[in-house]
Amino acid sequence: MTSIKKTTPATKTYGDITIKQLPESQIEITGAIPAAIFDSHRKKALENINKTIKIDGYRNGNVPEKILVSKVGEKTVLEEMAEIALSRAYPSIVIDNKLDPISRPEISITKIAPGNPLEFTIKATVMPEIRIGDYKKIAAATPARPATEAEVSEKEVEEALVRIQKSHEEESAGDHKGHDHSGFDTPEFKEKIKEALVSDKERISREKRRIEMADKIADASTIELPKVLIESELRRIEAQFSEDITRMGTTIKDYLDHAKKTVEDLRKEWRPHAEKKVKLQLVLNKIAEDEKISVEQKEIDEEVNHILEHYKDADRQKAAVYAAGVLGNEKVFQFLEKQSVK
Image (cartoon, rainbow, N blue to C red; front, top):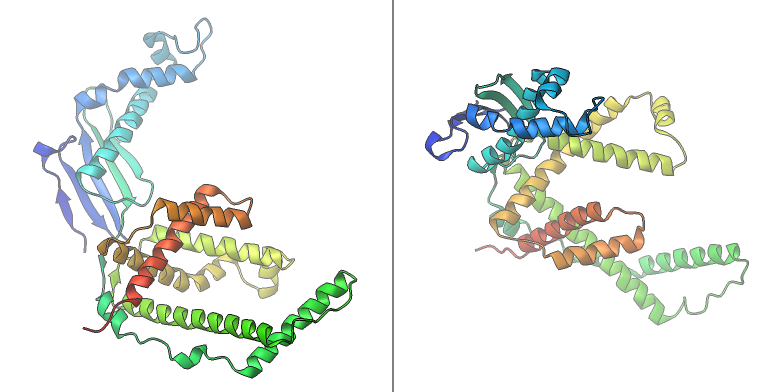
């Protein structure tokens, strides 16, 4: 069901603004920019057009208004005025109405004429309303994994030792060096192997509990997932899949031909996972917001530097966004793990 709300003309810059809620967390904004405000942008619009047009006999940017308008037409001037007016109006409408857009606005002009209000419609996707489950209670009721999951047998240690020795032999053979196994079969080295295996099992056990907690909290939450976020996640999955296929020495086309599938077939298969991933991230973000969990810039910078050490060609800005997300999620999970039954 859609709902409609209106701003209060007395307190808003742009008069009556109607906001209609649409499916998939979209909104439709309709309104008008008063004629006086719209017409006030004519000078700037003419300056912008003047900079982009060349007319024989006049220096760039110095074409008289009458000649400029006769050359480009009044419609072009009005359209430039509208672009300036709406580029300034939209942020004000967002702030005035406490909106949280997560997509670029789709702007349609419904009425444009000199000396008249500029009427418009704007569609955008906003952050959805999240009715989150009782995450503290769910987290506290999700038991820790059995300690036995992190136990390591002597057989596992021996098997790991064999793998390490084999790897060392292969590297030595490639370097045409002799095989030196000294230090591998000592109690100290075996103890280090055991500690590493225990640590790995503890990490896996912790991840299993986190997944269980997250799934339960997401299932107990209600969110109308924005299409724009799902599409973004699908693009990310597709890009990662393409990289993986290329790394294997083949191409997406060859893979699709062999599997007798299309990209759209794959996207349909990926969609449930994408929806789950988006919902979970929105839930984690909501918990962070409610509990005022944040990541300091210093922590982000340190993680970005660590990433760039291993991936020299990585984009620093993208790495910062990734680092902020990973560190934020880690803090939320640490918070959830501290919850206890009251």
